[in-house]
Image 1 (tube, rainbow, N blue to C red):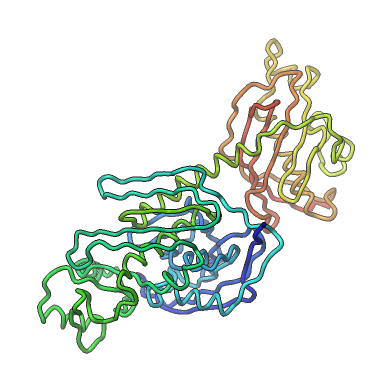
Image 2: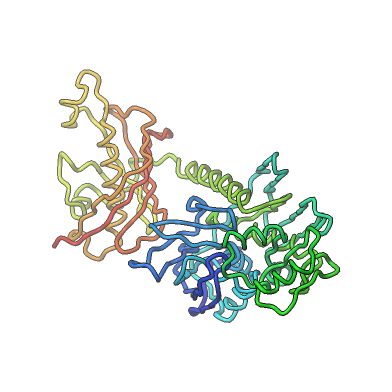
Length: 465
């Protein structure tokens, strides 16, 4: 049974202070369309730049996870993303009027409560899980970090162990057998730090929004009354002492193993940056943000590799076309000799397949290696771009009145020669929804079963009539 994607019914806002910046911020969760994913929008910056919640956008993991794109950053995203994954929400646009998400009580529960207040609704598109195909390992021997993702067909399961060589904290384990347990077992677990870390952060003015009620402080050294009095002053409290559990008595533990549960929460949030919902069992020993992000990159690279293989299939160039050459000329402004697409075999909202028959009669062979004719790589890219142009122009009601202008070509690779007699088949897939007339596509060109060219393209449609 296919599971449908979900978004929230109405916008909902939460306000609080950023832990490290000390700035008061308001964060608003907004409904978003299918296949949108998680995105942050900095509404306090001119142009309201959008930052994709993508592991490739991570720029810092020192005191939480920071993502940066389009000249803007958002810090401490992991607790917010964990709440979205834990409630199995797929598409949300998160407006933020500052550089850091609010720390709230140090857990994900305030975000969970806000999202539940907004309510969720199903969308038409199916949720496409990535099923972990085999054991995927990540290790950092110097930090004794070990992580493994294992196949599990029908759920998303987590097991986490933390061990900081601390007589107070000791070794702790936390586990959930299903992502459905997140709200009850994990969401309320607060962030924690050791007293010596807290002192360092305070000394370097790195915890400006500190409220001692949003973190568990593990006392890992002897503390005299003078130092406790100093801490009480810093946090605007009458007095502070060490509880029998070896933590500051500012708060009571919600779970005996709350630090381990919070590490599990962080893992869920950081792995959301893979960009697709996962199915598998994640096990980790001594995880942290840097390791989580490195592990997420490894999983994303595998997904990207597998998805590129899926598109490599043999098309029948003689199949009845969606558009023939005449129909293509009714859409594209190109004309021979610069019309480099003969027909369109497939066309959907998200992908297109086009055909170019390469013959010795092509005008470019007159001057391009006439003694050993090879189709120029730049013209292969142009033919790919024209194929993608059909896909983009298919989104407007009167395509003959629009032009497709290419803004960027990245990661172009030419893997084999294209010779007279070859039939070159292009497939272009949207990698994100078209917004403000801008489309991002991944294109490949094939001769038979062999990929001969690939590139990532960005284009904009503009009206000229």
